[in-house]
Length: 614
Ligand code: F6R
Image 1 (tube, rainbow, N blue to C red):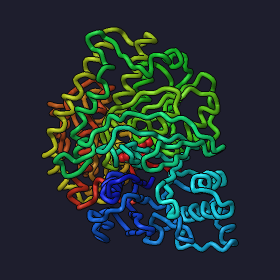
Image 2: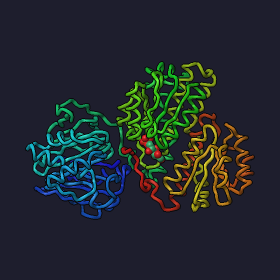
Image 3: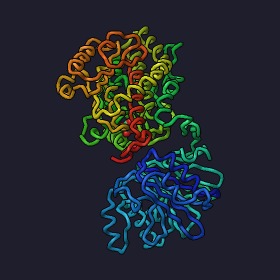
Image 4: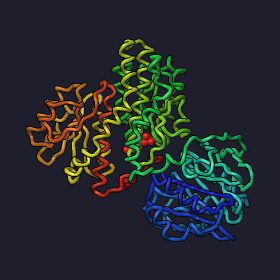
């Protein structure tokens, strides 16, 4: 978490940094800060809260300094405050640094530095790091690059840093371990950021630093990339980026979240484009073809993920077992990594992550690899740490997801996982040709059907208004739609702060039914395919206890309409594909409730888009 931006070149740095920080606010927004250098002086501006607050401190548009760095913070060490906001300076004021990550041994390092006379203004691990670099520099009379390299060999934890030395004002030094760092290469200028979005309008050429790498960036010179462990200069790969600026903007919508909800038909099409070959009755996935045997021979598949991606994994558990007949276990990455899991030689691990940077998922992958497992990644962000750490993988191609609450990430992950399950099912001979073709055809129709499901937007807004003041909310679903119930509840709680629980509908009678009274809205996913009669019985049970029923039903259903307070229709499809449709009204319901309550839907409190800490 936290976003960092840096610039060195001949343009005024501040508009680039301020705009860049706004694009990175999805990574945290507890505080913001900027450091600009000119004529021997570093000007520092910091504020609690968002970048918009920072802009009120100075006329940055008029600032002409051409070197600078900025930071938007998700607090780890130290409360959100001005003092704890980055950039941080060393005791002498000569070094300036921004940091994304956690220095785990900061306390021990700090004690040594305090003994040497260093003083600290903040509670952060970052201020320890900048002083450590200064100490190494002064003790050995090193240049900045060497001091950064040597200091980092004493550090444990994770970092992406930008460091500036007022004594050497024509260079920035950057380094990475565990947290992402991209360097945009312009014409005699460098842009540094946690991802490419801050500089995509200036250059589409970037270097993504690998772990244990650092770069010395001097204006007008080639970047010098070094290995932090031994200080040796190494070659780098210049990547051509495919992002465009339009994808990074709201495009007329009030919020990124609603834009991303409405982008789903297009996003799902992008996910299966070139892979779903209905005419040839074939699924072609470049990242999968070479490893089909491995998956085919797998004793079981273990899927690791967090949050919404974990819900997509639960849907995949149904699809893989149902269609491909491969046993699947779904694990929270954070639990898997710490519980000494049994991984057999023929197990395959699939890791799912929108950002590709989630620390727990990354650690779970490393653990699985260390035990000999083959790891397949499903990521959205191209070139992300998880995409690079896995043996093979498939991108979701959802385009940038900026709203903190995942929407199109979920549906595109489910799409990729369904494609994989179907490819394996036909490869293993576990599905008939006609059934396979039927699934391909129905999957191709999904974008159109999502479009149809989105037409309920106005109706859902009315329902949101009725229930916006509820204190609690229950979400029920069965089979493929049980994970959708979990995802619906997560969406509501994370953006509206209303307590919500997702349950398998049949579990209700084992406890949660005690909660039901006339004040409890219960959202029931009750589509025709999949345990319909059983869900109808569950609805009866809720009605008997005066719960308010909002049912998500298949188009044309009349039976449930009679039992429910509200019905929201989605088009009919195959059971395995229903999550792609039933999740749409739940996303819209959460969105409208949060907006009606005046919440910040794109940047809910305490959250960040990319969870790069444990
Ligand atoms: C919820 C949400 C989070 C993420 C989780 C994993 O809307 O966005 O629960 O799904 O933090 O993130 P990724 O998929 O980037 O690994």
